[in-house]
Each structure stands twice: as C-alpha cells, then as structure tokens.
Length: 318
Image (tube, rainbow, N blue to C red; front, side):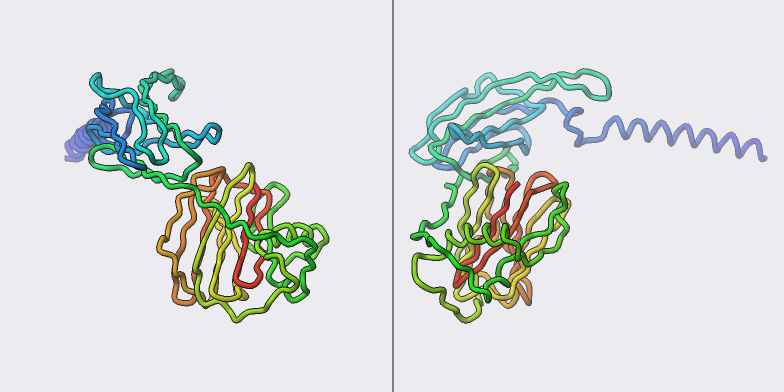
C-alpha cells in the first residue's frame, strides 16, 4: 500500500510539473513572447497624435530639447506596409512627424536577440509637455505648451527680514545626493545668498515686503525647467506661513504640505516631462494640500523653498 501511494505521489508530481511548465510557456503578457504589434496608422488632430495598432500600447517617450522633438518608441512592433511614413502638423504645436522601422539587438540571458521597433519622431514648434495614454486601438499622445513663470520686475538689493527666515527651507541631502526626507531651516551665508537669488524671482521691485493674512487657497501654479534646474511658483490668496518641505522615495519625490490650505486649481496633474521632472501632482486632504514633484533617478543636489507675500518658489537642482 505504501509503495502504491508513493507511485501515485510521483505520478502526480510529474503531472503537476508538466502542467506548470505548459502554463508558464503559454502565459500572456511578456512582450518578448507576443508576436509583433502591427502599427496600422498615425493620425494628427491639432495637438494630439493617435497611433492605431492591433492592441493597446505603452511606448517609451523622451524629449529632445534642441531642436524640440518628441520621440516615441514601441518595442516588439512592426509598421504596416500601408501605414503613412510622414506628415505635417495642423497649425498647433506639431510642425511635422515621421515614423521608421528599426531593428535593435539586445542581450537577454547571455543570448543576443533582435527586436523590431517602431520609432515615431514628432518635430515641435516649441518645447512642450506631453501625456501618453494607452488606448484600445494603440496609444494617444496629448501635447501641451510648457507654462512659463511670470516675469515681474525683479528686485535688486534684497535684505531678507529676520521674520522671513522661517519661510526659507531646504531639503536635507547627504553628500551622496540622497534626500533625508526632512527639511532644515538654513542660516548660513551660502543659504542666505541662494535664498536672495530665489526671492528676486518672486518679490516685485518695491521698497518693502508686506505681511498678509494666512493663505487659505492655492490659486495658480507655473513652472519652468532649464539645464539641471527646475523651478515652480505657487500663488495663493494670502501668505503661506504654515508648510513643510519633505521628500519621498521609490520613486524620488519632493513634496510640500500646505496646512489649512485648499486648492482652486482646475488640474490635479501637470505632466512636465522635462529635464528629470516627470510630473507635478496636487492632492487634497482634510487638513492640508500636498504638492508632489516626481523625478527620475534617485539623487539630487539641492531642493529649497522661499515664500513671501502671496508667492512661494520651490527650486530643485539635480
């Protein structure tokens, strides 16, 4: 009886193992096991591009700043022979576009494999931010013009009043560039110099700083990205005097909590996709509003905020 049960047990084990092997070989979802996606058509409608394929797609995308171009690549894909290869924009942010079939070689587990790639290059009128959405028919790309910070008359000889020092914060960062998660209030001469440069962007040219009632709402947000630097200016209906700068990881995010403040912004997500900044998100909580700036990578050099009157600037150097 014992031998019989052992034999049955071995038979079951072999059967289950074979079943598992068959199941793993037939799993759906690993792109390298699927046949190439067939890209059938590309359509431009104003500032939106629709790429039609035989299944939903999520392409890789990146911006080339000069001359401005948006490049999208779909791995394991093939361009239909009847698909258009190039086209013009329709008077918006898109100047023209072109598509090409590539063949990339990559090493997978010690074995060199060839992957078909469809590459779409969109020539732009100016720098933009974009949002890519996977659709039933392939994917869609919506383009938006990059918002520029307002350009008020800049202050010159700025003296930071002592009562404003509590409104100047910087993120703690290790020598290796790892954010500590906590902010510190800076007082060194170097910190004061950096804060003055930031205040020039948000203090208009006038003789004195005016103290205002506490802000209750965020009313506007502008941002700009340059080489190695990102700046955002938040405008409220009063003075931001109760906030906290912090960082979060996995992925790296720089966040600001505004206590006792609501948001009046129509949008809750701003797709920046410029430099190392991916997007800005606004979250509303019962006691605060949280602004989150999500970055690529795991390190940064500096992040700090200054606030005066109705405006706050956050500056990130990476």
